[in-house]
Length: 233
Picture (tube, rainbow, N blue to C red):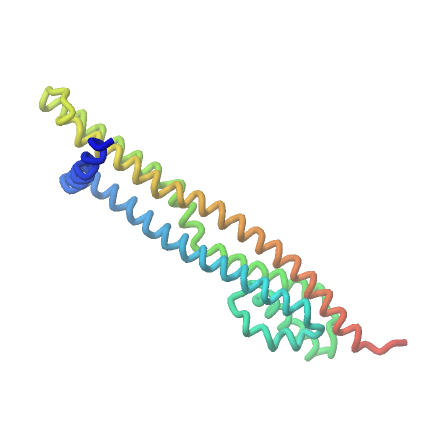
């Protein structure tokens, strides 16, 4: 156990030396994979914070929406929850209600209101899905970039073998080492991207379902608001 730990720093030095002495093509492969990984983690952290905040604000706004009997009161409080996807859908629907009321003093075109709510939900989902395609690209492309680096390293190892006519690890080690590093880098970039792409996709699907349910609640509240104002026979 002690001998293994004692060799660990030497292994790190060898890997670093291997990277520093690599040819331009393996270095370019590692640089590209590093860039993919960096951008992917930036998106992952940003999207994690954004979706968590959206879900939190959605719950708070929904509680206010269900307690308020009037659309006007909800509209006055909606600014406190800016960033919640439900607020975006509510703003679309409330704008359409205001247009119809300004023209006819009541809401008569429910089909137009439904379409407006659907547009609002679609826009919010599009905003939530922004940059997710980069995670999908990273998950699908990086293993192949790593494979290219692997093949290049093996070719380099065979070339060194043919030049020196020696089968020692000192001869083929650098090429094989470069190949293994490229493989590891490709997987290290692709696996988190794939995992979080699926996780975020599931969360966005749940939020999308919540937006659809909210549109129905908005329609119900609109009907109650304007049924109260209609003259009774």
